[in-house]
Image (cartoon, one colour):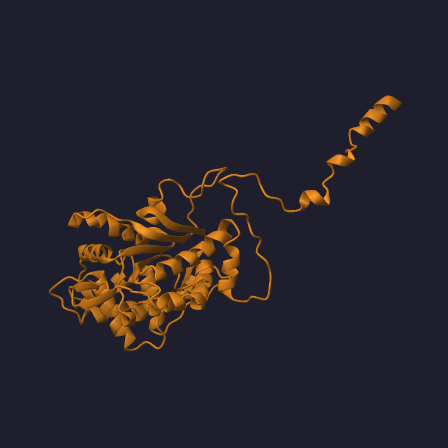
Length: 377
């Protein structure tokens, strides 16, 4: 290798002193004027503030999931401060995974006004209200040995098949007491079921808390649950002819939407519960009233619109994610398992919501047999 080539090669890796990053270059400087670069990311710091609400406040200055979770907390508070009718649509194994007391807490404290839950979720709530439990599974447990022991597995949670069957029979016995000459909306049926459970419950869940707080609970998938298995068993034994009036649920939900000043929806997971809440606006056609759309929407789910490049995570067709929204609605999409996000949000609300609740004018519901009356002060 010639001396000239060696010198040229060496000089290619020599960076002039002027190109080194100096201390002056890393000091904070004002960015070029633009309408976009106005809110810099604020890194989340570790400090002695141990409140969950304080942590979420710090996360408001971050990005991605951290910011969206903080936004969800802020939007929930805004709903309470704006006299919003707050509708929660919940789906999935929230009860077996340990979320029952959190949901009971937000119901008791009227951080929510309407519950829409899956049938499986309400059956599991009833199961625990009857004094039963769900249990943690271990990866070493095989399906074969669980089946032989009459144990059902839901992801990493277990339940006794025998105890579930006892709950089925309890539901069937309850429906024997009801008027067999007419149909019941799920809203009326679940209110009466909550009343029956409240007389024996030692630990409130969704149904008993909703009964005591006088808020309606709807279940669009009640046929896809062990609640209906219990009812079907009683009918098979020719003990009753109980049946549901699903159309009345849609009329009740329409009335709630029409009477509310402002509505907001919190979706915990996806599924039919979320789809049913969308009918609140769609059903306004029945009374020839233009749909206003929800002013607020929070979605906590692992279902996610596609990200990519400069594309916003919220697609143009937000109705697929949030339901029908008002123009300019405040939204937060938390791409997270609800069993992670919900404990954080509810704990934060326990620390921050009191001042928003003092002046809150929430809807009042009057339950008169099959009729539901909505009073907005």
